[in-house]
Image (cartoon, rainbow over all chains, first blue to last red; front, top):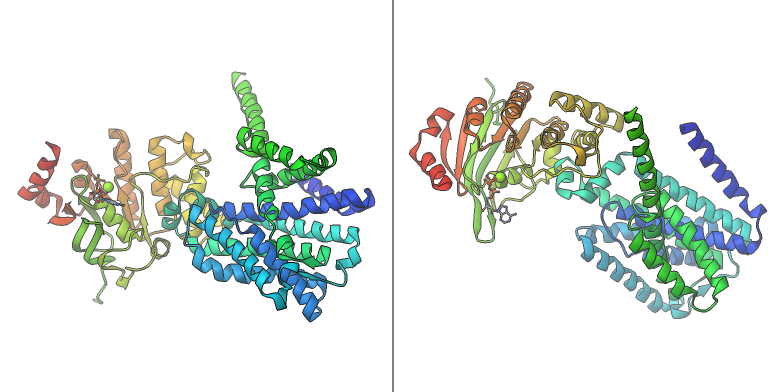
Length: 316
Length: 242
Ligand SMILES: Nc1ncnc2c1ncn2[C@@H]1O[C@H](COP(=O)(O)OP(=O)(O)OP(=O)(O)O)[C@@H](O)[C@H]1O
Ligand SMILES: [Mg+2]
């Protein structure tokens, strides 16, 4: 069983890696976009696993984008390396802000993260000399000279890394800490868990991921502006994908982003005008009728068959 | 003989909720190895005292010393690691976890073990308190099992001092007797125990010494025999029951 799992994972990695050789540039671009949202969704979900609802996803995504693009522009940093600078910058900002805002809970935390993302946008728009203001900045060339295959590989490996981090969260003491914190902070504290330390840790790690993805995205287009870097879609789509696929897991956001990501492209082709409306309706329907996401529904069905099997066994 | 600080010592401990004084300038000590009973009518401040000493509430006034060390402003997780444990009168299991995982949490973080040793430790304490079904989700556990799980969780961090806040409430005679035996075995492991209980026979059976609280104040202190005959204690209880 375990062996099968490992073989399956290796298969997915190999197929994912060889994917560009099977498809044309358009599907490849769609999948690259899906992977971008997948990493954002996973990072949002990882924070949610601590019980904290963050609306800062697009904010740290944009910070990473600016840090990456501007270091390449002004300091001539290698674009690939600059992506990690984007992650580091987002992490440092998250660390500093986390000290102040991780005492907040629930809606207060959510609103504050949203407000901070708004502040980042205003700063980016007004630091004209550095960021180019509302018009933004353009690099002479996109990363890998815009080669879609290499860009896909870049996102592919960032996604693999994010999935790995998510699984580390799920399989180590981190899972015990953050699940306990999410369920009952009083029990968690009384059992020796340093809540603030874990919240800060998860906030910094997930912001770093968002910064890396933002850096990669900015380098993919060789361009950054406040509107593109801090766009609402980088906050809302990942959340919708997680809710659709199922929260508090690695598989949920992965499934959700693939299904909703591909679906949105398909709808765009079918209905060039109004696809967003249909998309919105589908998201609302998924959330209403599958409160535990697609993954939750699958688990329920599987559990029922298992229980039935057990009952049958007992009858014998 | 070298001077040994009492395991717990509180000085002028006060906890207010707005105008209400739940714990009112308490001063007492707990000797290492003893079983201390805390009794008192509903609302006397027993649970609040537990919350303040275990670090969930910061006191409004006063100081708390654990093994002679000032812990007044340490958070609950730090006090847990130092060796102060407690159960919850209103049980607070982690509902997403199995019974064993609930116990593992304090072995992982209170005692600082790795996953594998924490699992072993959790199995050991579950066994110690007589929990047999450990791999079930908490929602399918019985009340007795949940109470045992609370105690097991409190023990898994290897505490030196443990508060048991009404762990026998709601149990039948056989179950209560089993719990009494468990508490005695906890104490004989070298753990100092503070039992909060309404059932007098339990207090009589278990404790070396009793503190009686009423409206946040100590109204009597001493052996069960001595305390139970004091008129103010009798009237505090009579005043409540009738
Ligand atoms: N968090 C709180 N906020 C406000 N008042 C509180 C709080 N906790 C306790 N109190 C009040 O403090 C007083 C003492 O309550 P506490 O729970 O400590 O009593 P107790 O001795 O444990 O009672 P019981 O035997 O019913 O468990 C009560 O009047 C209670 O209403
Ligand atoms: Mg109480």
